[in-house]
Length: 52
Image (cartoon, rainbow, N blue to C red; front, side, top):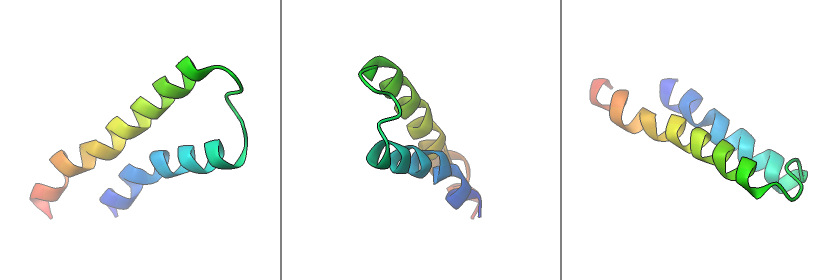
């Protein structure tokens, strides 16, 4: 469950970006949000998997 919930922000981001143009022309904010979502998702590989 932890691995799925860790990637939930990244998947949600992808759905919103692919479906609606929520950021408009503001690519800097989009990249910052993408980076944060990606870091949350990647944290599951280093913190949860050794304990599974």
